[in-house]
Length: 281
Image 1 (cartoon, rainbow, N blue to C red):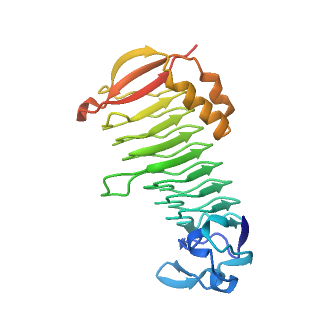
Image 2 (image 1 turned 60 degrees about the vertical axis):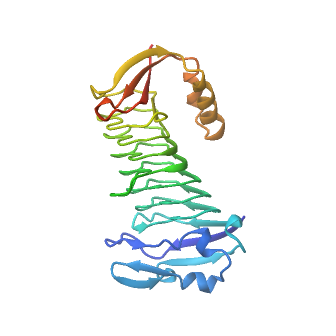
């Protein structure tokens, strides 16, 4: 892949910079000068990418061959990789809100943490966050009927409130703890939680096929989730092997062959989703 490097010229902006243009789909096929002149928004002012970043490296002829490296902490930059369909983005530090929102393909790797709404309404591709994620990871925007509809998000740390709200398809893996309302209004897809799952897990979960798998402690289940059985799911081996081999989560294999307690709900809304909680000991 051909690498384009963006090095921040500023730091600690109190007003975020909206930069949907930091995407292989937008940058591929342009000259370095044209990349510098791409439009970004700082508050109510339209400015250029070159005012905030040093631009160097190579521009690929098409998005599939484009690697963009953001070389530093940019928690003040919003919409990195938003809507991208191909290529790769690497952030060598923290990133701001809406990272990878509505993306349909390609890969984003963040070596630090991210703000709220990362992967919101994502339809495809892969996001890896080596730190923590803010609230509403892979969620539906307010008023939208569906959140994440495909792809995979892996957070190595913890995730904030309402992860996967309105999720329809796809996979979210949380290596650490999950804040309250994870999987709220979920209507499909799979969420793995390796750490502690907080209250209101799966609130108003609906569709058959919605699945939350808890490998750590669960603070409290809603009373509208009904215990069904304790069993060893045959499909779990495939999931756990995939997490180990494809995502590099070697500890996933420790749970192969373990029994799980299955709860169905959320009965408050007539839901038939599942929450699986690993048996301790």
